[in-house]
Amino acid sequence: MTIDFSKIKTLIVDMDNTLCDTFHTLSKPQWGKVEEALEAKGWGAYAALLKENFGKHGFKHTLEHSDMSEEQIKYALSVYEKVDVAPLELFADAHDILDVDIPKILLSRGEPTHQQNKIEHLDLAQYFEKIRIVDTFHTKTDAIKEIIGDSDPKAFLIIGDRIEEEIADGKLLGIPTVLVRRPDWPVAESDVVPDMVVSSLKSVKEKLKL
Ligand SMILES: [Mg+2]
Image 1 (cartoon, helix red, strand yellow):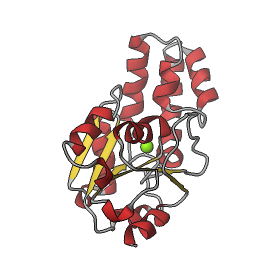
Image 2 (image 1 turned 180 degrees about the vertical axis):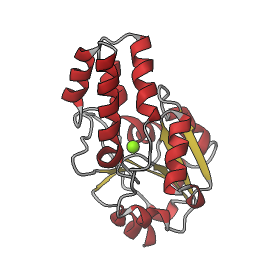
Image 3 (image 1 turned 135 degrees about the vertical axis):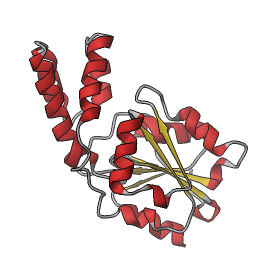
């Protein structure tokens, strides 16, 4: 689908690895803390599994595709989510979207308190009409459905880094999508084809201004 940028009235923007460099500035300390915690519990094999998957798969994906018990997964997530968000930084191009004069909704998945801490640390609330956080083990699909309601899906634009999440949801719901590719951050294998692929949010800003 070719995006008709003149129709876009609302941006639905993902946070982690779209606006902020979670992978380089936060994930490394987070994965490290979880590895230490798992080792301390005597679950060193899972610590090794995390080491192996870092930079290849997301944290939740790694846990879910291991044979960890539900209790072990909960424990790993609780350690992950307690790590201080202070090192987290916006990408240099984040303001190309944050400052664009179109209403925006921030849509993020993760443990709500942890995600809220990131939003406060980055001072992001001021740029958004609405903030929707969906819990770690939920998909973004229902939240996106709620956001569009009875409106024309083509009046929205989804901007995100996860082809298997917000981009797949956009395809399913007929909403135009932009996949943002970030350095070292892998894009999952998927049959989904984004409507536009960019390596900088500046390219999206330029289209929106036309
Ligand atoms: Mg993301």
